[in-house]
Length: 272
Image (cartoon, rainbow, N blue to C red):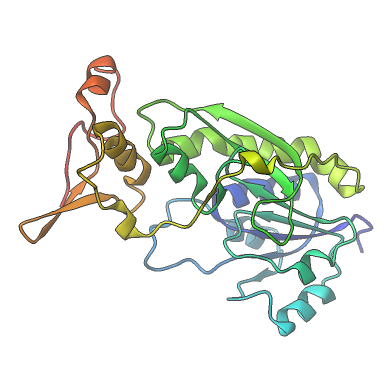
């Protein structure tokens, strides 16, 4: 039986896959993965941690709600010393967060305290941000509000769509975890409280949120399009009762400045 600290990993998405793969490659004592069933209505364009877990004989659980008495009992039976959450989509209750003696920490896809909440990369692009990142922080009752252990950012271009931005920032998560895992495993990670005055929070996005508001500026519409284009549900407008999808378009000023660059999709293309 391993004497290494027992890590309970909550995770999803390719960020979860990369971080779990890193831990397993190091030979860490991951006792289980708690993740999500793939949604048949969602385009799964990313690797998931379940793939890494199954290759390494790590037990995989997919509860709809971990905060029930039944699941709290099951998690307690796993005797986790450390909880790591990486792109897990549900809130983990404080009774579970209090279980591991080494604490519970989350990897969030923004440079906290900005962009707490869901879909931070999509929201950052929609807001015209030029830099995004990954933040490792302690989990507390409120979402993404705990003290920061480490973070790393990367620049994104004015024409990057959400998938391109995701690919750019993805390595940041693994590098942050690489830097901090030894300190986490002995309970000595340095933590810095977040500045609440700088905090912003955004909710999850639905396909309907891709509707184009033609009263906005061309730059705002462009940012919406690149924030939700394929593999996300896409921006759209309704014309004469038919839905027109806008998978790529550019304001004239941006198209002129970047005319030598190749777009993420065919320039000014549409697909219905």
